[in-house]
Structures are given as structure tokens and as C-alpha cells.
Image (cartoon, rainbow, N blue to C red):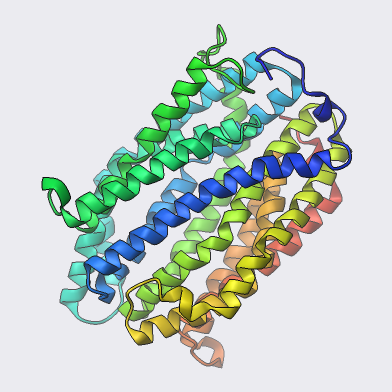
Length: 475
């Protein structure tokens, strides 16, 4: 579709028949491939660090300490991407190409400002934060604890310093997908991940005359890699006008205050949901940090493998958001509701092979890493528990994508609050440490609590979708 052309007929007609499934899969499959690349990078990082440390628990423990913090920062402070994706999808569905392009450009400006703010605040507060972590980390050898904190702190410094690049890229990916572009983010992700893996290897091992920076080098490579994707995607958007969205349209490079307000309005409840989830996630993580280095290492390995299940979840979430947003922009409310259900069904079908792998071959999967025997057994047990949560994860993430595509982020916020703070957080501590007279399950109890969280959230998401109020949110 060229900029300025009318909305495609199939969108105007509500994607009849099998056209809806084809459109969902057209968007979901490339997104899954991109997330697969991210996961492979995650797995390769873990394997590289494990190999460089000779299979010791401390290096993986430091990576497990800092990775959730970086993930939380990214998710919380790139929430403008959620609002921007919904606005761009709605404008594309309305056939307003110029407004869609301006919404994209405006969202990049907001992401830049937010990213710089995060960098300034977090860099100045990093030392205090690491000191606080040191006081609350697992009991044990103080020298081991100091080494874990030192390596984690080096990784975190570079990640924070380069955070604005990541904020811009996450927002750019969301808006491009919202417009219905499926392949461009994948190509950018392929190049970015290859650069990241190469950079990790060079700086972790000190190849080709570069300094051997260890885990700090992994943090530097991870922070720089999104720059390649940013340059690539922006170059294509500036150069080509034969796309669903383009920055080469005259007047596209304008920061619109009205659209900025709309993006912020939609992003505020998304920000609330992110804060609620990740504040709970930090408390949940401390249930792991208070165990021991073995549990932390096992958790890192298990979560790296289980992240395979997140691939279709994130892919179908992105597809559902784009399809719903464009259908609502075209005035097709019934089709938007139908797309929410179809996306969920397709996502559940896609995840069956992953569930089988997690149930049937947990030890073989864990064998990808250089782990001590007892650590590997614990990680494998966690994978079996994690397999139980996967169907509920798929339902929740896909329906959440539909709600976000419609701009219904308030519903997502309270669903997140209930699942995280009423189930995941309290049960992680209760089951791990045997509170309320229950047996102490250790790391397994933490993983059981996660299953409870996704079960509850999937039920609540389904109830909200059924009520249909989300179809009438003004964007």
C-alpha cells in the first residue's frame, strides 16, 4: 500500500473467511522469528558466560541478577511503544497515512526523552542500588557475593548508559508492526542480534586484540547492538514510499503535540501495568535471590530455555494488536472481536510442540549449558513445572495484545495487578520458604507461583474480552 492510498479492501470488509487467519499469521510468524532471534541471543549469551566461567555458578548468578532488572527497565520505560502502536494502527486503519507517519515520528521523540531520563536517573542511582542488592542477596560466602555484584554492576552500567537507543528501537518496532509491516523489524532484528552475539564473543573472550571485559563486555555489546537495527529501519522508512508507513511523505517529520498527548494518554495505564508487574517481579525475584547461587544459576538456565514459549506469545500479541487496531480504525467492531478469538486459537495450536519438548526432554534441553549435575537437575524440574503455565501464558498474552491494540490498557493494568500481587508475589515466598505451615519447595515453589499467576490472568482476560467494552475505546 502506498502512502495516501485508501485502506485495503479486506480490512474494510472485516477480513472475511480465512483472510483473517492469513493476516494474523502474516504478522505473527515474522514477529515470532524475530523473538526467536532474541531468544537465541539470550541462550548464546548464557552459554558463552557459562563456558567462559568453566561451568561455575557465580557467573550465571550475576547474569541472573542483572538480566531481570534490565528487562524490567526496558518494559516499564518503553511503554510509549504500546500507546504509539495503537495510535499508528488506528490511523492506518482509517487510511490517514500522513497522520500515521507523524504519530510514528512523535513516538520516537517521546521515546528519546524518556530514554535519556532513565539513563540520567539510573546512572546516578546505580551505586546505591547495587549496595542495597548486596545487603539483600543470598546468605553465604561474602567473597562470592562481592564477585557476583561486581560483574553484575559492570553489565548494568553499559546497559543504562546506552538505554536511549533501546527505547527508540522498541518504540520503532511497535509502530512499524502496528502499521501492518511484518518483515522490516525481522530484518533489523536479524542484523542486530548477529552483531550482538559477535560483540559478546569479542568482548567476553577478548578476541582480535579487544580487551577481555567478561560479563561487563556482554553488557556493552548488548547495549550497542540495537543501534544497527535503528539505522537500518529508519533508513528504509526514509528511503521507501512503497510501504504501509513511510517517513518520506512531505510533512511526516513533525512532532504533533495532539498525537503526543494521545500516545501518553494510552501509555499511562500501560505504564501502570508495567510498574505493577515489574515491582512485583522484583519482589518475586528476591524469593530466588535469597536461596543460593545454585538456585540462581538453575533459574537462569531454565528461564533461558522456557523463553522459547514466549516466542509465539509475543508474536501473536503483536499480530493481535495490529489487526485489532486497524479493524477498529476501519469501523469493523465485530471483526475485531472475532480476531481476538482467532489469534488466541492460532497461538495455542502453535505452542503444542514447545509444550511437548518441555515435558518430554527437560534434561536434554538443560544439557545445552555447562552446569553442575545438581544444578542441571533442578533446572530440568523447573522446566517441567513451567510447561504447565505455557497454555495460560499464550491465552493471556494474545488477548492482552487485542486489548492493547484497541487502547484498552486500563483493563490490562488491573488484570496485571491481580495476577502479580495477589498470586505470583505472595505464593512465590509462601511456597519457596514454607510459610503458613506449608513445606518449603525452594526454587520449585517460585515456579509454581508463576503458573498460578498466568492461570488467573488468562481467566480475567477472557472475561474482559467477552464483555466487549474494549471495542469502544476512543483512540
